[in-house]
Length: 323
Image (cartoon, rainbow, N blue to C red):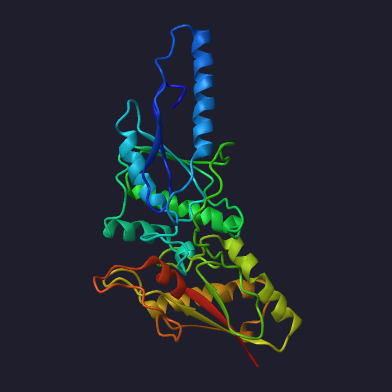
């Protein structure tokens, strides 16, 4: 943008996103050498201003900042372009990753929830670059590689639904990215894969992901890695048998598969991984209960809108060793 002689607008992604500053470059000289020198000086100036930005409100609102930034970007010339420099861990509604289940929610469901809530920014015709999504700093707990990849998938689904013309994820963060804040931000829990033991182990959407309305794993290799400790425990104790119980989120009426059928199929998928590892079939019992389990949390509004976080918590495979 700076190399094209375009203005740069700075927006803080705090709990009250607003334009903080604006850099308007002078007309670039016709002389090529002078032009390069001016552009280099402008880049230094923009970088310096970027490093001085500080939040003036609690929490983080990336979606709100995108809305403000997209409006500002359309006031200039050329293709409206927005650069987001943030971990992406928003901590305010309607996309609050500090709420249980949201970090592991289905990307398409997150985007649809925001659309139905009229909370999507209008990004039609806007190119969006994202730097640092999934990268955290203390005291925020770091995300695993799988969680970072899933977080980027959520943002891609949201931005595509919002109409962004181009979406790019950058692997580096600018050297002068703003750091520190006098305002507290809620930390986001990054659930770890639960250790398998002689007590019920719950593998929900944070650790074991299936394709929507399918018993197919999103990442079969990752699923096998999650289940590796289970295989090891079963091999170490030949007398152990395992109850594998599938659960699901509420289905939208008229859409998707029967809940009992789907949850049973997902339990069978887990059973098949264990069979493939040489565990005897008579030691593995698979069943599905749909939404009929004690830990079920309401995941749909009175208007029939699926809540992505609770839905992600309800999608699980539960492992119970039995004698």
